[in-house]
Image 1: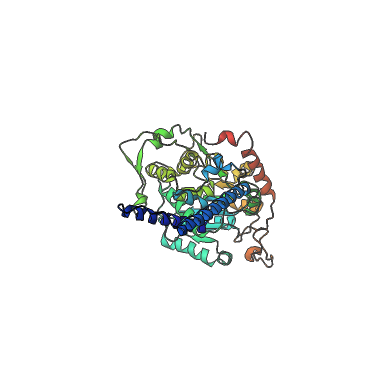
Image 2: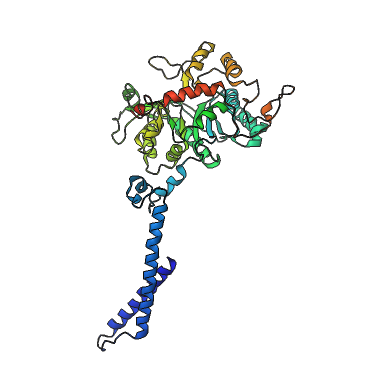
Length: 454
């Protein structure tokens, strides 16, 4: 191809010189081309003909061997959407695919966030969730005193397993987070960006608070998720916003957490706005498990929808319960990847209030029967947490949750997980059986497609 381009350039240059000679001497009799020039023409034409023939054959062979298949595969919609483009947006999508193949051990990227007084509970939740195959970002917001944040930082940096594996990070430059305002969405996007940049390969992003707690071991969760398509997004959502249209969508709020260093509640503007027509509003739970490809899309926003929706939700009350839901259901690329569940056990009032009930020992049976991998909310050090540790996670006080990756021995009260073995090996138990039931229900013919972005 390079030789063909050189020949074509030389041919055009020669032709231009000849024309220039003819037009620069109009009064002179026209001279016939000399034989050497005729030989040059023949040489260039021969090279061009051979090069063109070679290019056509190469194109034909490439088309036949293409994974898209077929000589006319370039006419199909799938190949049209992925064809090369001079625009930068086509290049941004390259990194959106998940890192792991189906049936390999997946990796989960967790955000565990808390506020003032949540430091100890955050550490306990991290211990209950830890697995060396995963990635973790922890965050205590700016309302927590510096001593509490420093205590969590020292714990993360000083834990021998966390330090050896290097998969736990703390956001040391804390954000001020107001749950009812957009600052919680901004903090979630902040953590997701850190995980995309520094977290290596992972498949799902799960946001939790310090008052959340797992109901299955990570070996159970990773085992069940190994057989799931990596593009699934577990997000509770509906377009039937009902009373939220008048109490959340139409009011305009300002979140001082965006520009102040001290936390205060959001305040309302007297003027109200209409429901948007450029996109359709969706609402749901603020807790979700999102695919890496969708998180990549939210950060990069190559068609600008995530940024447009984010600007709208900057003045929306309880924006964490609508931002990701509205983005995913208005994005053609992702709307058919939703699983309508937040995979949490949560006990709500009817109708739901701003916050759910705190869970206690009375809720233990209901939590187990839900087959959910997570539950919320819990008071710090509630006795039900000890029961979950003992009966569901098999975690001893002050230790990590045991899994197949733990290569140590329980001698004289030592933690067998203090020595890290092969993190890709899993030992699923009863928790995997329960979670598998939930996945079969959520992905059934009756629940999966009919409940997507409705």
